[in-house]
Image (tube, rainbow, N blue to C red; front, side, top):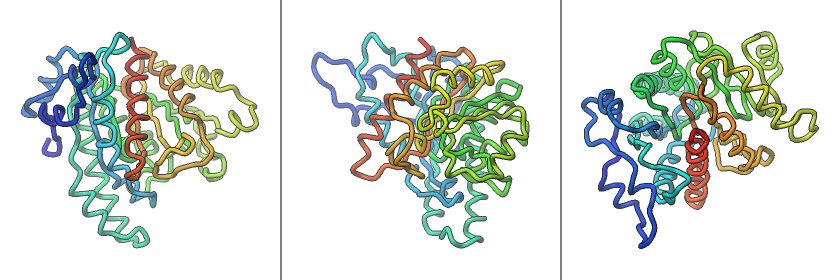
Length: 338
């Protein structure tokens, strides 16, 4: 795998802010020194989780979204490494593998225009290549008996996460998507808006639940598609938070019942949270606390096989806040399984 870049001990040392009398997350996590035998090395390590970054915004560009999701990994890793290590979490359970290097694809995309159909078609082909690397790595991690924690990139990477997990488990999987959008759009070439529809059509995704769809930004045709498919269920943000026709906790219970008959993935789109810098930032969405509760609830299931936190797109002044947010979500997931 040519795109994998391992996180090195000297990089961790550079990012760490050590303090006397304190024990930091980054002082105890596991690292790899070679990528020659990734599967064997991951399998032999006494860890439960493998953290991997996907710094790209190629799929977002192809979906005519706002670029910036390529920065999320760097925003997160420094904050996470400096999180306290205490009785609530054991960093020794975690291998921070590093990130997949998509810089060439990101650089090519940065020189193209979204209003040019030929450019969009070119970028869609780049997304297909990204899919291959993501699904390959996730396959190796899950096949080694570990749980991937996947950070950054666009929601196009849901496809690789689902496919890789499905292939490793040798069966289709289910998925819960905490998202303002369905990402179940037409099979029109790969982008961040159709990762789930591609995974569904190719048999890697079985049951699918979308939690918190925004009614104003979902087309009638998409709602018709969802209603016609028995394996897909959903609720809307407005039904829960505005009209209060549905209760948040009751809906989590309903969603878990729909997906927990087999292994499932947890997808968290930062677009679903209010005022979080993302590819489709919203002034009206779930709170950070609700999101953390959501992760704690679904992460505590033994059927949860991975978590993917995506679509955050922080600007320079927002980097630390976004990094801190995602570090909370990562550690919430880990704590939910203890």
